[in-house]
Image (cartoon, rainbow, N blue to C red; front, side, top):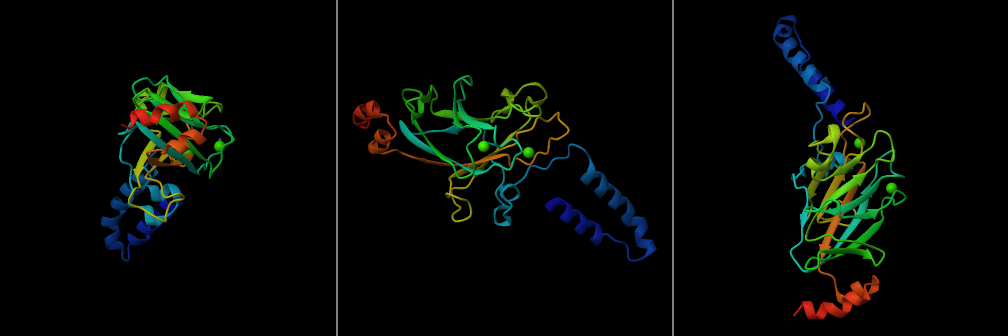
Amino acid sequence: MHKKAEDSDKRSRFKPARPREAIIVTPLLLVLLILTTAPCAWAVPTLGDILQNPALDDITDTGRIYMSLEHSWMLIEMNIILENAGFRATNKFGIFDIDRPECRLEVFDGPAQEGQTTDVIFDTDEHKAWIDPMNKAEIGARFGFYLDSSERSSGGFFYSDSSLNTAADYNITHFLFFDTKNITGLIPGDPHSVIAFEDLRISTCVYDGDYNDMVVGIKSQIPEPVTIALLGLGSLFVILPRRRR
Ligand SMILES: [Ca+2]
Ligand SMILES: [Ca+2]
């Protein structure tokens, strides 16, 4: 919608006032029309486009495909900011170890909605990540993100590392990574980073490339021992002081 409004602005600017000018202007107009209507000419959206907030229009994709944790123990808070998707009731979101993509941890199931927050605790020395004692995986300091929309016919399984995507989506980016640590008061929860997924396969006629199907805010901190205990990881609490020496 935003793009259409821009296009119509351009057209009216080029509207010829006299027939003589039209000889020069018409080819320009044709090129403009071809460029703006060509199939597959998907522009990568900014964070402003995705969250429909012009104040975030300068925030563009960093190109990053994974996170790298620097401490032995880390708590990563993940928060669903937006799920503007027909598949929002079935889309699943999670993380995977960048060196062993088969090691995955689901963070949000289909019924999870906008506003839901989940904390994931990492013990990077032991190569482990937990949500709670029942939901854990062998994921180390470098982890990527996935979106699983494969329950629907035009969906698929998409990794932040697009070289792991399959079939026509191999090397097709379904994931954007925005750095938002210097922004306050504009994004719910004031996240340090925002990640955004497109949930439709590129080969389907319904593909739209709007990357607003699963938008998650990411915040990281070093967890307090009491936080680990509250999450039910009591046995870890016992070994934590030894590690911090
Ligand atoms: Ca959902
Ligand atoms: Ca989409």
